[in-house]
Image 1 (cartoon, one colour):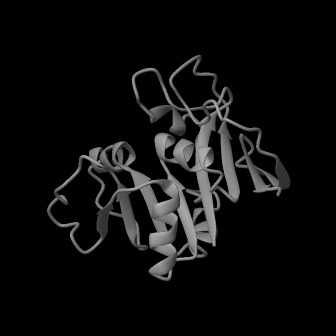
Image 2 (spheres, rainbow, N blue to C red):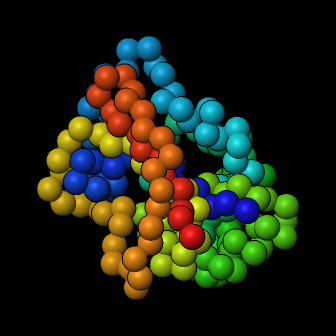
Image 3 (cartoon, rainbow, N blue to C red):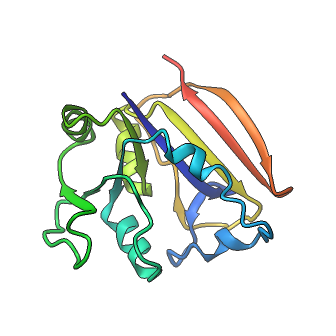
Amino acid sequence: MKNIVYIATSIDGYIADKNGNIDWLYIVENPDKDDLGWSEFIKNIDAIVMGKNTFEKILSFNMGWHYQKPVFILSNSMKVIPEGLADKIEIISGTPQEVTELLHNKGFNNIYVDGGATVQQFLKEDLIEELIITKIPILLGGGVPLFTELDNQMVFELVETKIMINHLVQIKYKRKR
């Protein structure tokens, strides 16, 4: 079973700016509307775990629900599934270890972990096997960091580096144990 992070950050490692916005993700023109590896990534994913804040940010785009995989919203406070999403999401709670075991028992082996706080919680429990990080060429100077303090060092092995649309760098790391 693998828990995988697939996320974009600024050069200085932020996933949202000081106001929680992510509009800076689109500063690079993508004339061919390349999905930047998303379809290749998601076809190998069984389910998605995201935090409530990430879920609410996605809903704020008013673009409809685009996930074709089961999505589990990790939240202790959210009790009601928004209208129209009852067959698409499930609200769960628990530690990252408990969530991983629950999803594994449901037959989900490759889990996409999304959202800053959720990724940080999974990292603190050493439950991330792969990091796929796309660097956007901007320095935000502050905001929501992807990484926070950990109790122990974690070593990752570089698997692949790609330059995309002549501006973005996508780096894939695998946890070295």
